[in-house]
Image 1 (cartoon, helix red, strand yellow):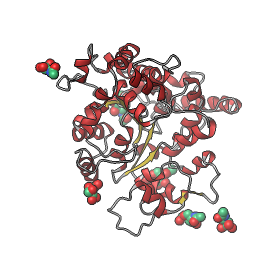
Image 2 (image 1 turned 60 degrees about the horizontal axis):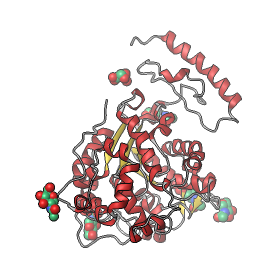
Image 3 (image 1 turned 180 degrees about the vertical axis):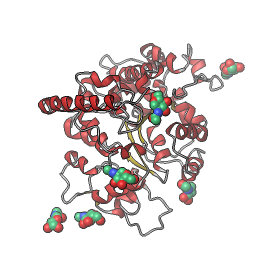
Image 4 (image 1 turned 180 degrees about the horizontal axis):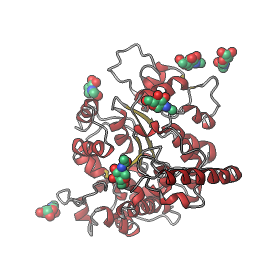
Amino acid sequence: MQCSWKAVLLLALASIAIQYTAIRTFTTKSFHSCPVPNPMNCSLNQEAESADRLCDESPTFAYNLSKKTHVLILATTRSGSSFVGQLFNQHFDVFYLFEPLYHVQYTLIPKLTQTKGSTDRRIMLGAGRDLLRSLYDCDLYFLENYIKPQPVNHTTDRLFRRGASKALCSPPVCETLTPIDIPLEEGDCVKKCGTLNLTLATESCKDHGHVAIKTVRVPEVNDLRALVDDPRLNLKIIQLVRDPRGILASRSETFRDTYRLWRIWDGTGRKPYNLDVTQLTTVCEDFLNSVSTGLSRPPWLKGKYMLVRYEDLARNPLKKTEEMYEFLGIPMDSNVERWIQNNTRGDRSAAKHKYGTVRNSAATAEKWRFRLSYEIVAFTQNACQQVLVQLGYKLVSSEKELKNLSISLVEDKDFSPFW
Ligand SMILES: *[C@@H]1O[C@H](CO)[C@@H](O)[C@H](O)[C@H]1NC(C)=O
Ligand SMILES: *[C@@H]1O[C@H](CO)[C@@H](O)[C@H](O)[C@H]1NC(C)=O
Ligand SMILES: *[C@@H]1O[C@H](CO)[C@@H](O)[C@H](O)[C@H]1NC(C)=O
Ligand SMILES: *[C@@H]1O[C@H](CO)[C@@H](O)[C@H](O)[C@H]1NC(C)=O
Ligand SMILES: *[C@@H]1O[C@H](CO)[C@@H](O)[C@H](O)[C@H]1NC(C)=O
Ligand SMILES: *[C@@H]1O[C@H](CO)[C@@H](O)[C@H](O)[C@H]1NC(C)=O
């Protein structure tokens, strides 16, 4: 497309008008997207005309930000997201944050449980997106709005799972006594590093070439459109999915109280009348919405969306990880490679921590086949049939088939990103 100054001028005028509207409606909108077209390219974003997408900053905003790649790992609980998070946490040039949206959820909806109704989950989306935007901009002070008790002098000891972020456990944020090369265990980090200085964390973030954030608190990819459409962010989404049957089995084991009725069903063979089926169906609906969007290849996700099946990653961690880094355009780092080699072999070093990632990844991915009764599997297949087929997970039609590991339930399927 020809780049004309007229177009740029028109655009600037339009943006003043939009800003004016934005100021007037500021109090009623909790979140603004700013669909500024890439000035290097002059192709007008169609979204610019959409009335409800407002622009709160001038298009002359420095484009420096977009030199960084911002990565969002979109996942759900027990889908292997800690594992995928580590693949970025270990990279020397990636500033990684583990579930910062926990704080938004905790503040806005304290009673929310892991997978409660979708209306509740959406309450926090506007605030969540604002927080993500700030964090990608390395504004860690923004988190203070959501940390209880409120941090004083920009320091806190209440950051959720601080120890899961390598950058927050190493210099300059934490001057450990041990050599830098030895990463601290998660619990040791909290003990040895003391209070977190958010000013230092901000500096560390700025010193890294890229920012990666993992979340299980965004329901589906469509919820991220406003961020993806913002060219200043250069956001790329890696969506991690897993066989819903495997997720159900893993959750029943990990969240024993919340999933108690499923275990009763499993143990007694009788389905409790008050079973909360949405604990399963919400996952399947979110996957279905996301995956349908992703596979339809909409222009707004071009080059910005990659779907990864946990099972493929578990089977071939190094190869999949290389593919992810290639998609992101970030050179892979030997730390990542070493971490994979160290943590996917199922040696005796199996982690005891329930969120641990150290285990034999391939075997873990299949364990559900022995944990769930055939009856529950059949129920799940019925409830989630569409998404199972879409993601290439094979349905079983007998107990025998379920337990026979020489029958693979994961079809080969190509989910390469589209450009
Ligand atoms: C402009 O956009 C086109 C299509 O999206 C892309 O192929 C091209 O690389 C872009 N050019 C620049 C300079 O960003
Ligand atoms: C953008 O980059 C230039 C050169 O790299 C630098 O001088 C300038 O301060 C940066 N601007 C911002 C807002 O970071
Ligand atoms: C915060 O900093 C001020 C000025 O340095 C100091 O007086 C105050 O005691 C600090 N507050 C806490 C809780 O550390
Ligand atoms: C946090 O680190 C900054 C930058 O080094 C420093 O100026 C500040 O005093 C530190 N805050 C506290 C409370 O120690
Ligand atoms: C690999 O595992 C060994 C033994 O647990 C540990 O000493 C080493 O630091 C690990 N290396 C990496 C890169 O994680
Ligand atoms: C498991 O499946 C394989 C492949 O279909 C079959 O050859 C084998 O007999 C089955 N094993 C059992 C114990 O049913």
